[in-house]
Length: 477
Ligand SMILES: [Zn+2]
Image (cartoon, rainbow, N blue to C red):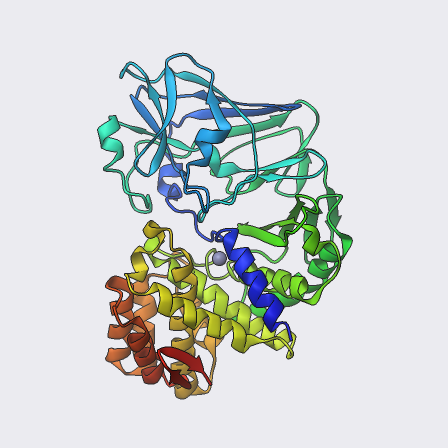
C-alpha cells in the first residue's frame, strides 16, 4: 500500500545522499595510539565559529581525512564554509582532498586559525552538518581530522580510501565548547569535551531530549511531533528484531538525533546517517508536516537501514571502502526483512524490485569502484541483490533466511571487527556449493558487464531466486 508513495519518496531520499556506515579512511586504532597529534579547539560564540589548529610538527601540506563532495554539484563543501584567518595559509582542493598549505611552499605555521559558517549540505557518503530551527547546530566530529603530507604532489598519491594506509599522525585531539552554554556530547550536557576520534555528532545549543526505555531522542523543538512519536515507537521494535536474529549489536541504547529545516514549500525530504550509538536524521519540507503513510514508511525504512548498521557496519565493518556493498546492501536486506516481519502489509517486493532495477542500471561498470564514480547507489542495490542470492542459497540449504546467513559471519568476526569480502564470498561458496555463483558476483564487483542484466539474472538463477525476464528487465516473482 505504500508502494507509489514510498517509491517516489525513496527517490527523494536518494537525492539526499547516502548514509555512511564505516568512515572512509577512519584513522585506525593503532594510529590513535600514536603519542603526538595535532590539536584543535572548536569554539562557538554566538554566530561566530572558529577552529584553532595547533600542529605537532612541520609539514608543507596538511590534508583532511574527510574531504567528501556535495551531492549533486560534486563541489568540496569545506571550501564554501571555511575561511583561513592565518596569513600565508591557503585552503584548497588537490585531487580527492581538501588541504591546508603554506602559500610560499614552506611549512604550514604551527598555529592556524579558521572561521567557519556551518551549513547543512548533503554530502556523498559522509556526515553533514545539521542546523536546527532554533539555531542549534550539530557538527560531525570527524570534520577536523588532518594528516601531514610531504608535498602538494604527494597528495595525489594518497589513496582516497585511507583504510590500511599508514599515516604519520593519528586523529586530532579536538576540544569542543560553546561560549553560550553547555554542549551535548554522547547524550550528556557538558561544559566542554575533548577527545580524539570521537566518531559522533556534537550538539551546540538547545534541543528536546527524551530519555526512553531503550532509546534517547534528541529533536529539534519544531520538528512535527508525529515524526518523533513514530520513531520512538518504531526504532526499539526494529532493534529488538535485529538483536533476536543476530545477537547483540554495537549498542542496546541508541540515541536518535532529529533535525528539522522547516516546512519548505514543495519539499519532502529526509536524510541522515549512523555513527556508534547514534542515528542522525534530517527532515525538511511541507510534505512531512502532516502524518502520512508514505513519509511514515520512509522514516521506518530509514530507521531499519540505519539501525542495521549497529550490527553490519559497527559490530563488524568492512575492510576497505570498495567493499561497502557488504554493509550497505546487507543493511538494505536486513531492513526489508525486518519491516516485513513487523508490518506484513509493507511492500517488500517493491523495494527488492527497485534494488534489482538499480543494480542492472549501475553494474555496467565495476561495483567495487562505484563510489569513485559518485555512483554510491550501486553499493546499496547490487549489495542487496548479492544478499538476496545469499539468502536464497541459505534457504535451499537449511530453510533459513538472510539473518541465518549473516549471523555466523558476524559472530566469527566479533573479535577482529572486520567482515572481509573474501569471508563473505567464502561463506557463500560453503552454503551454495556452487563456485560459479561467486565467480559471477566477482565479475560484477570487479569488471561490471555490458550485459549486467544477463549476469544478474544468472546470479539469481544459480541462487534460486524466482524471477522472469520481461524484455530486458528482470522481474521478481
Ligand atoms: Zn547505510
